[in-house]
Image (cartoon, rainbow, N blue to C red; front, side):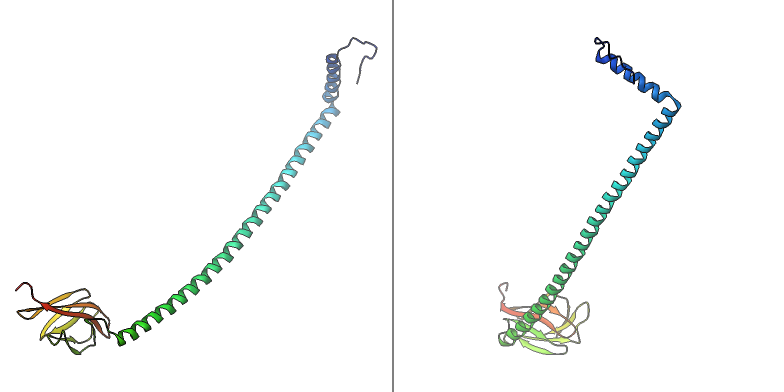
Length: 194
């Protein structure tokens, strides 16, 4: 690098221009250009290698986080599945207990005007005003019922109106049925229309 030391009036700007000229001369020679290309290529390669390694490091960390989250969710799913199974078992036990207690209660204290009737069975109901019998076994779509000698087809929720005498009106309502029995209610009252 060439500088004039004896000239005290030389400004910093001129010194930078002389240094720039020296650097320009250095890099414009064949050896300088090769050096510049080599340094540039080395820097680019270093940045590329560093970028790839850093990217792999970030990807590995993200994969570890993902795997950890998946594992945690799997553990939580298994816990919820176990809890659900326990609740279903508990509900089934409670339902069985309720049915057993309801059967005992119905045997001790049957609901007023609530009757269970089996296939081909007859019952005398409503203080002897109605004779109700189920004809055959219940079907999928309904039951056949005989009330005071008259046959009716009915489904759940049907109410059959009977007038055993002019001063009495009776209602027979089908509550439910299955292949073994039918449940119905029967009640009579004084006919207010006649």
